[in-house]
Image (tube, rainbow, N blue to C red; front, side, top):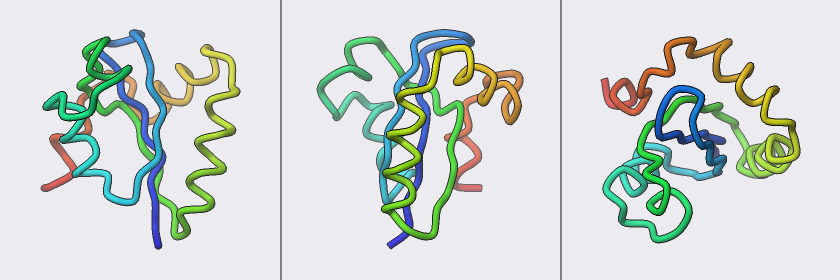
Length: 95
């Protein structure tokens, strides 16, 4: 089974949430519509700013664990490298 690591935010340089899923479009939709109680709904994290795809969900889970231990500055640099404007990538998922 394939998987994704993703980062949600509320604004550029804002609060970050790192998650893992096998269905990125569905999971981000759940965050955006506040169907998931918890951190993302509490802090209004509705913008998908980064994601990586993996052939194996276990690799995605390991990457998520690694990213969660990174310093914030590294996470911001990772996002900025692929998405310098912090665009909402969810809008591009279903194109």
